[in-house]
Amino acid sequence: MLSKYYKNSYFLTGFYLANNTFLHNLTHQLPIKRAAIPIKWINKHTKMCIDGFLRSGGTYFAYYFRHFNPDDHLAHHTHSLQQINKAYANELPVVITIRHPLDSLSSLICYDSRLSISVALHTYIYFYEGLLKLPPTIYFDLVEHKGTPWELIQKVNKYYGTSFAAPILSDKELADFLATIPIEIPSPSILSSPIPNEDKRRKKEIIKKELLKYKKYNKAVEVYQALKNRSI
Image (cartoon, rainbow, N blue to C red; front, side, top):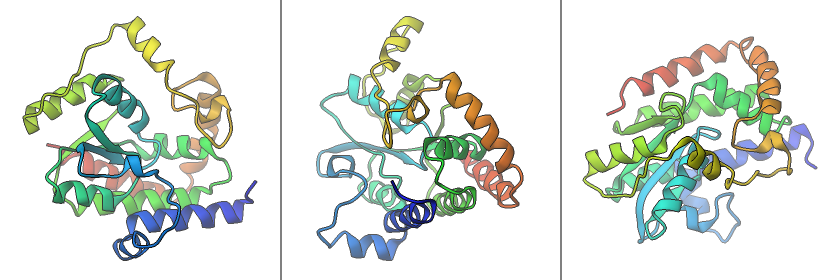
């Protein structure tokens, strides 16, 4: 088990390798193990890219998309500005998942409490400022869409002229679908599940109170709102 110091150092190293242009290009030439497995990166078979900062609803959408579009390769979950840049360069449909910092960061720290709030805020702001330098695209806020990823795919189809499957699920069908999404590492804990639950809610409320005490929190809200306001 990594100590808090090494956890934060490890997290920052991985973050910059994925999001700093020079470091990303350099390390992609080296035979090193990457956090995101190869199938998640853009390749010649990729039909769409959805990515964003950690804990922003990407898991929910990715499972839905792949379940109903099994033959269409989806690039996702690299949490990398460079992946998004490549999607633009390849003229792929691009969707960026966004989430209010209070929710995104409380969920991230709930997932692994060794991560410090200051590091979480710094990386959130860095990532969103990087997105603001890129052309506007479709930004998906899971809260605003009330848990309906089919609305997002329909929007993608309309804007990009694609024909991805996007069936509307009943409440029971949606519940059954959510039950298929596995709990994530670092431990088989209900706190690491991407699906909302009462244990997570209670812990996140404690973290949210701490987040509000940091000066950088206001900057995080500012970049989130700026990105949200430019969605196509």
